[in-house]
Length: 269
Length: 269
Image (cartoon, rainbow over all chains, first blue to last red; front, side):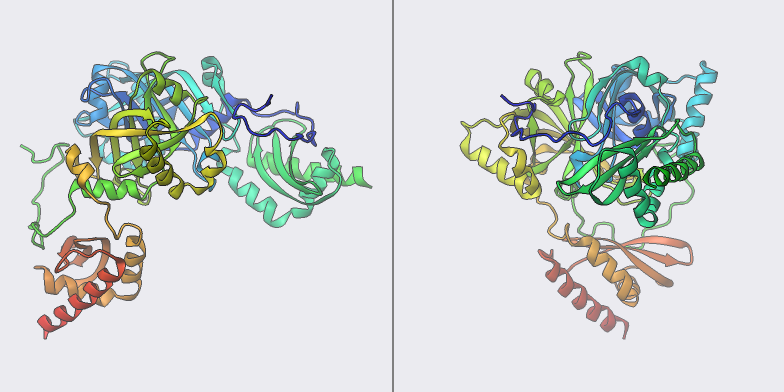
């Protein structure tokens, strides 16, 4: 008997050091945050030639809500394919980790169609969303053969790294908001690890069951809280701590981190 | 009338400063070189659910000759898809340029099937090719649910950046060899631009029609020669110069560059 889908040795899984019911982003929120931070991906279409094969092509992309928007040429293979069969998917992948399979990725499936001039408001939305992310595309947005296309997302597969994956319910995908800390998370994490190593240890001891901690590194931060890797006598252990309430800006997060440090010091004394 | 497929204004295209029939890598060679330098890509399969949709997923990859090899789990969506329908493609894309559409990419299409234990030599080849590029995969290569799969390339679409694209004849793809300078090209280019700016100007004036050159930067190097961007009175102009004969190692390339510098100095004096 194994408890692991990949049939790895089980060993004795250690008890978590934190309350695992603590507020955490949903997969819909994680996936929307991931794609909001990316501007390129792989568009998958059904090829005309060789007929019926799935065809992957590199594209630049932006998001109009939860739907990917493209500015593509009528001369391109993927566009020929979509004109014949609208079924498509877009894969967007994070980079960052040295282990490529530890990075997150999202596959969005649905029909991808040209946004016609008749749908004026939709076209304006698509254009604005795309050019906000790809300002240099203004240069070719006016070429006769280029048009905006939108993939209406109907199914979403999210893989957040090892062991974190699901089909995200489509309604949740469209309702979710990208994390407001998305664009600033990397800088906050770098700052906390460089300048506030002591605070990270205090958070761990005050807000988790961890006791003997020689050091701790922040590994993630989002609107609901933050994650650390704590060095314990039994090796590195993950600890997640929630903010008292969700934050909406990087400045909010900073204030919450300072307030929680005060609270941690109070508990210790 | 326009001479450009994208219907851009034509202007007066300047006459090339170099012999455009100079030895140059074929698209097959460029594409094989590109994929040889990459270890991840997007695998496109035909989804079971939503049925018939093209499904893009992130994969690690290696190349056994011209065929991509994967080590994938029977639990993964793409594997379920391939078990039902072997038609697949793999998109591999370069990074590097700040302009994402200036980077090269290759789509390889064909049937992707599990390499069974019965095909012992093929399995050994696939395993060795994969583990040479992904040594850490040894850790899970032995899991029961993981197996090696190979995409037998039947069609190849190459896009080398703006205006350089073609369907590569399949026989050429399989016969071509990745450029031997591929792994060292970036270092050679950086070295030439950092330490041999004068030599680059000399190459341009000795081996092209360019005369008034204030500076030149190396932009590419391959077994057949190298490319520069020369700053002229009319702005930057591309210049390609061939080696006297194809080189096979970085050391060869270095010797050829030195010999050509001597030749350039002789011509000038």
